[in-house]
Amino acid sequence: MVEDTGPGIPPEHLPRIFERFYRAEPSRARQSGGAGLGLAITKHIALAHGGRVEASNLPEGGARFTLVLPEGVLHTAHTPLLERSGRHPGAGED
Image (cartoon, rainbow, N blue to C red; front, top):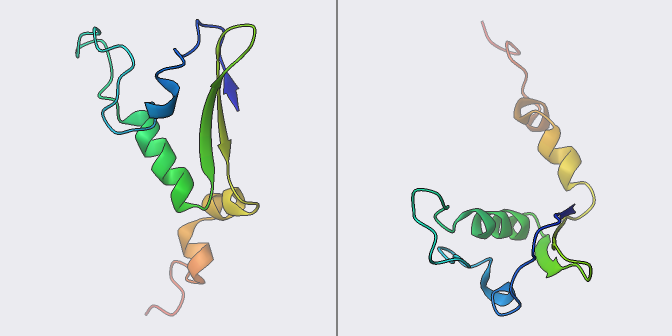
């Protein structure tokens, strides 16, 4: 979970912020703003691992982003690929 103390996300934008290329502040110049891909990529990574990502506003102001992944996903993600595959560098090589 990540929270901030900013103004929050306007309620009319909350349902769309995980869409590709969606930017809640269209007036931002492209040079200073993002492409509107970060949250969409986050959503797809979460879904690919059987999880979800959510955004909401805090009652006292600010936004909250919550990433929920099934148990065991983080452990597997941090295990080196060679170790997960059962292969080890130099094993069985001449």
